[in-house]
Length: 155
Image 1 (cartoon, rainbow, N blue to C red):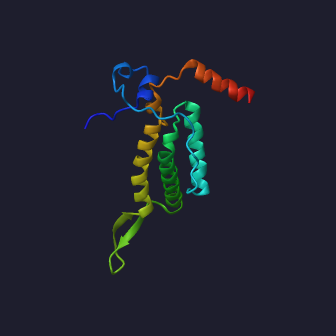
Image 2: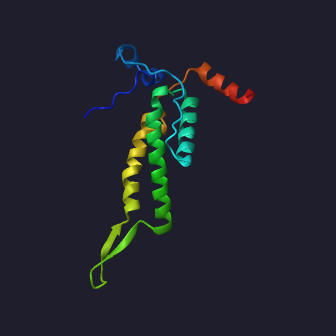
Image 3: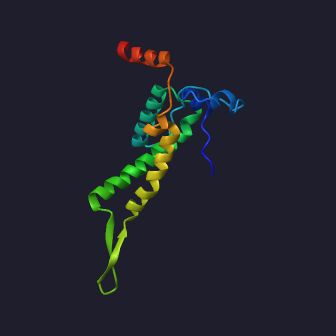
């Protein structure tokens, strides 16, 4: 399996030569903030708003990103709920035979959930450009960055 295709906008931000010659017919999503969902919990909405704010600030937000951000927010909250449980209760529990003798130890379901959700979150974060390596080659236009800094200062 080869490398995953990157969106044309990401290639352009990375000053990749592929942006000039590669996938010229790729559909371009409309930039902007997606509609805020009404089916998330309060905590999930906090995560959703946080991610939308960060992606908008980075200049990579599109209105079509809403459902992916919803899934991220939902997964993130499930991950941290499991992590809190594991912090309080540990990762394992003793497994005993019918006589009460220790046979071994097994992972708690919440620890297994962490092992499943962690890589899922990482993939989503990489897709959104939320990890250092996924941002490594991205270059925002200087005026865009300066305008955002001025807005922050003068707002």
